[in-house]
Amino acid sequence: MQQEEDDYFQSEEFMDILERYEQATASGHTPYMDIDELIDVADYYLSTGKYDQAKEATELALELHPDAEDPVTMMADIMFETQQWKEAIVWLNRVLDNNPFDLQAWVNITDSYLQTEQYAEALDSAEYALAIQPDHPQATLQKAFALTHQERYQEAGEIFDHYLEQCPDDELALYHAAFNLCFLERYAEANKMLTRAEELSEGLSPEHLNICLQRSYTEARLGNLQEALAALERSKSFVDPDANVDYNLLTGHVFLLCGHQDKATEHFAKALSTAQDITHTMRAIAQVFMDCQAYNIASDIFQEIEELIVKPEYEESRADIIKAICPSQAYCYYQTGHKAEYLYYLHMAVQLNPHDTEIFFRDVFPLGARPEDYPYYAENSPD
Image (cartoon, rainbow, N blue to C red):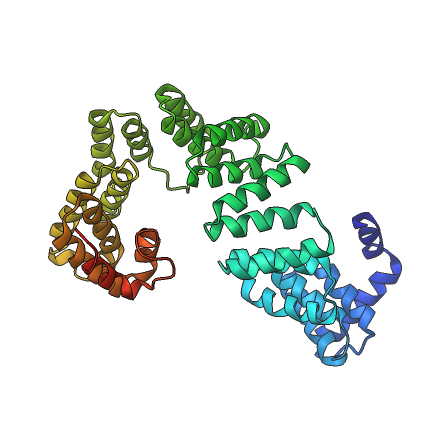
């Protein structure tokens, strides 16, 4: 199909259409052309990466032929190809209004919803695509992604398994399936998938860095210190120069997971000594201690951050930092049984950062409780 399209764009017939179009626009005149000709011109520009020209030709087609469906589809394609996700959703919905059985439009709108973090809508769209073509590989994977982002990890795992039955050598799917399993604390299964993903990637996959980093985490979770450190070392070969990967922080996390707190502390100290944003690095270290259920230490670090940001140089960023850390601090005090401090930070958290507060506490309070109601439940719960 692509070859046929390329051949057509090189044909005398199309070159004549393109010349007429470009001569008219260059002279400031409207090229009154058939809908098929305008769409061919737009498609040519799109295929050659001339997105602005493709959009202009499509807008003209919409103006001259307002009832035609092809310009709507072309505009949706342009917005999708240029990653203008919100605009793509608008145009793809128009495509689907015209043809609710357009499988590619359902797949593209699902991707757009995922990119804009509209996960419920993404799940619905993936379901529509799968209703048209059951077992469609891309739609199946999109459904798994949407479920993971909705924290429906068990369901997502089942969909990932189903996809991998069809495409067992997809290293990207193996990586995401393993990532999903980590939320279920099924680290041995996740590690097996990551090992296979790394073998398949052979350093060629753009996800190879993330595969190695995630494998270092699962190996550490399994207590395999040397294997975890080796995975971190392998990942260094694939780090983008612009990527912000702090290996001291990651190495400290591995050591802490494997029970070597002294070694972890050494690496955290190195991370702090080279940090461009010290409060950000301190928060990251505190989160590592929380991941290892060392809530007392994490709480102490958050307290150090609060003491640090009283300095004048933090005046502009102070409110944002407090907003970021108060849900974590509330959770640490909840875990350590310091009820007065827990209630103090919980009240602050639900006011300043209800989204993150819900992430930390939704399993603590009754199902469906709103973050603003958390203090009521906390104050009226038995000690």
